[in-house]
Length: 155
Image 1 (cartoon, rainbow, N blue to C red):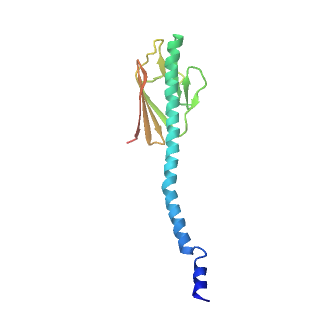
Image 2: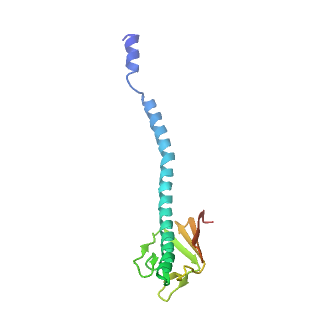
Image 3: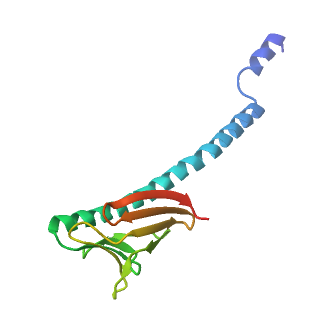
């Protein structure tokens, strides 16, 4: 075989070593990207749940002012639901725990936040924990409704 024929034969494809290096580099890149994408989706679902709770609290306040009647935001720990008055509640996900300072407990076992006809309520702090790790705090001001949402890690 001539030298020219040997050189042509060497350049017709990739060696096994070159292919292995490329596959290893791709695996490393995927290993760094995939966890970030998964974490972003988890944070989006957490934020969506928090926004739903805040929306329902604000709805209760606005409904009390519009109807000039007391409106109740409730959390039902037995059924893991929350919502307004007697409306069908929204589900609390299994990986979520809700704690509160300021909600009153009814005889039926519900925890409620009462909004009066002027839109005022008792000051309340909701602590929402995801997967026993990430916490959100929702502060409900007696005169202005939801005042603040903050996120932190459970210590």
